[in-house]
Each structure stands twice: as C-alpha cells, then as structure tokens.
Amino acid sequence: MESAKLIASLTHLLRDVGIAEDIAHDALIVALEKWPNIGIPDNPGAWLMTVAKRRAIDLIRRTKKRDQKYTEIARGTDLYTEEDVDLVVNEEIGDELLRLIFMTCHPVLSQEARVALTLRLLCGLTTDEIARSFLLSESTVAQRIVRAKRTLRSENVPFEVPAKEDRKERLSTVLEVIYLMYNEGYAATSGDHWVRPLLCQEALRLGRVLAEIAQSESEVHGLVALMELQSSRLKTRVNAKGEPILLMDQNRAQWDRLLIRRGLAALERSERVGVPLGQYAIQAKISACHAEAVSVEETNWVKIAALYEALYRVSPSPIVELNHAVAISMAFGPSFGLQLVDELLMEPSLQEYHLLYSVRGDLLFKLGRTDDARIEFKRAVSMTKNEKEKSLLMSRAKECES
Image (cartoon, rainbow, N blue to C red; front, side, top):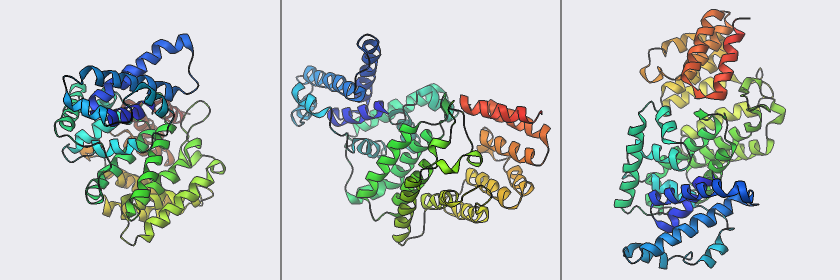
C-alpha cells in the first residue's frame, strides 16, 4: 500500500504517473539496501516518502533548464525545497490516491487499460500477476500499461478530482476500480496471502472520502456499505496460519459489529436517495443478510436468492449466476443448485474460473458424490494462482477420499 501512496503523492508533484512509479520503486530499492544496516525506521512510510520526494525534486532541478514544463510545476508547488519536504512527510496523504484513481479512470483510456493500470499502481500487482489474472501474455499487459501511461502524459490528463459534471461521467468507472482494489485485498488473485487487509482498508477509506464529495449518489453509498459489511468479516477469513476460513465456518461472534452498523447506515443512505438500487447497493443488501444472521442456518437464503435475481437484472454476468446457484442450493438443497451450476459449465468465460469447479465440487460432496467432487476440487486447484486457496482446495479433495 505504501507504493500506491508514494506513486499518488509523486504524481501530484511531477504530473507524470510513469516517472512517479519509477521514483517510487527507486525509493523502495533504497530502503531494501539501507534498512538491513540502519534498521527499519519508526515511520517507514514517512522515510520512503522523504527519499522519494527528494529524488523527485532532484529530478525537477536537473531537468528544469531543459524542460520548461517541469520548471513551472516545481515553482508552483509547495514542495520545491528540501525544508518543505520535511514539513510535509508527516502530513496526511489526503485524497491523492483518489485523484490518482480519477486520473487513471479518464475516458482517454480503454477499460482494459484502466484496469491494468489500477492493478499495477494501486494494488501493487506485478505485470506477470496481472497477466495471469486475465489469462494474457506478460508482454501484452506490459505494453498495455506503457501505452496507458504514455496516453495520460500526451493528453495532459489532470491529476485532480474533476468538477461535479465531469465527475459524474467517470463515477461508475471509479467505483469499479475502488471495488476492484477492495476485492484484490479481500481475496487475492495470486501470491502467498489470501487476504491483504491494508488494501481493503485503503479502498474503504477512499470510498468514504468519495461518499463525502458525492453525497447524492446512491451507488457510492452502496459501495461503501458493501465494503463496510464485508470488512466486518475480514479478521475471521483466515486462521492464525493465514489459511482461508470460508463464510460458513467463520466465528460470527468475532465479526466487527461497529463496521456492520456503519455498513447498514451507509445502505440506508443509499436507499434514501430514492432511485432504483444499483449493483453495489444490492450486493450490500446481500451482505447485510449475512451480517444480521446469527448462524448459517438462520440466514435468509430465500431472500438472498431473490436479491441475486435482482442483481442479475441490474448487472448480468455468469459470476452472478454462479452465486445465485449457491444461494439456491442453500435455500432449497444442493441438487437444485447443481442443476444451475451444470448449466454454466458451457459458459466460455467461466472455463478457467476456478470457483465454478470449487462450487460444483462442494455441491457434489453434499450429495455424496465424493469421487466426482474430488475431481472438481483438483480441477479448481490447477486453476487458482493463490497458494492459500490451493491448500484449501487440496484439503477439500483429500476430504473426499476419507
């Protein structure tokens, strides 16, 4: 998360997201070289920010005679001297990350470019990890990111939260990006950790900031509600070893009641706007059903199934259909859910989606078809890129052998 903050702050200073990313990486390399000798500083984020901003100012000074644009930017900022840097390194980052999101969500970029750039700059994924997530070659993703940064520079896309009329135009993409960022923290697509709490916290913070400046937008409050409610379960999603704990097995007594109350309040604000609920508000209502139930058995699965039907009408997708099948299985039995899941087996976009086979394995297991279930769990193992999730699915496969 420090990398994203550095990039956002440096972009504010340099007005060039590509150079900002390079300097942020340089600062992290300096830290890796020095910290083993001098020890980790009390405030690592401030230390990194100091190094990065001093390098940025050095760059501005070196190039100001050659590049009048940089000179003007440097003169126009409060961060022109090293003394000024010392004054700001301990200040709140503010909404610079939000400005960076609005910048990377500019209409001059394609949807694919926005997503790739967001995963790279805000979520800290490597080019290889992004490529594996979208089943693309690493070179394709790398070129997409390079072109996106070049376009932002050539089009002089401003580093700002736009005025109300322009903000509304970009709002749906910004919400999508913030939720993408949150989901990467809630269930990491790759790596050794299943959850990345700091990423979730930052996405939630950005959502709260956005809700303050777009109070009349139902979906903004809906997204905040969804993230608050899901965050209430974060601490129970993994055990002491970092191994995943599924929703059905979580200790609900440990769910964060304050976050649940905040989520329900945000959901109420979303509904008070008086427009038909969008995809985030409906998902928040589904999450609220879980939050308000004292146990899995007492969860209103019929209502959740109905909400997934409503969600499909607003935002149709095979993944929504898969979640609907799970809700149907919980409400009416696994054979009904399996029938719906089997209809999705031919869906092209889900052919490499590991959760399709994980869900099918679970339903087959509940129906006593353990040999078939084991095959599905192993198929899911071969598709996921997350090591913790692989371990979980392998244990489910072994469970079928006992």
